[in-house]
Length: 81
Image (tube, rainbow, N blue to C red; front, side, top):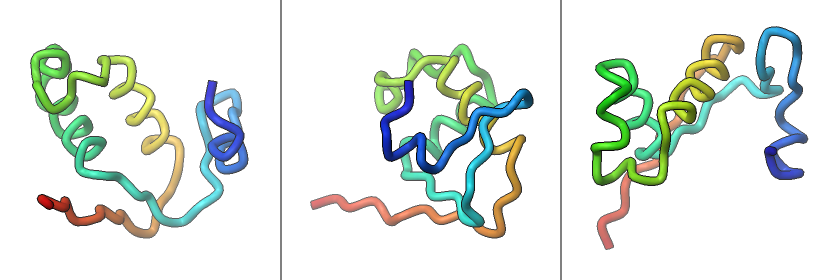
């Protein structure tokens, strides 16, 4: 179940989640999840940096992207400090 803050941004329609925003913000972990899932979803549980994610998380992320229109993709820089 999404948090209260997430529910303010999401509405669950019959055809998936709809986000009330024009920009999509993906941190590096979600971007890697998206790329890895596009290549081969069975690799997700094997990737050390994606150990917190499941194949279903990739499906949920793809559903959000497929059912919404975003004007821009924002990815914050990774901080190595």
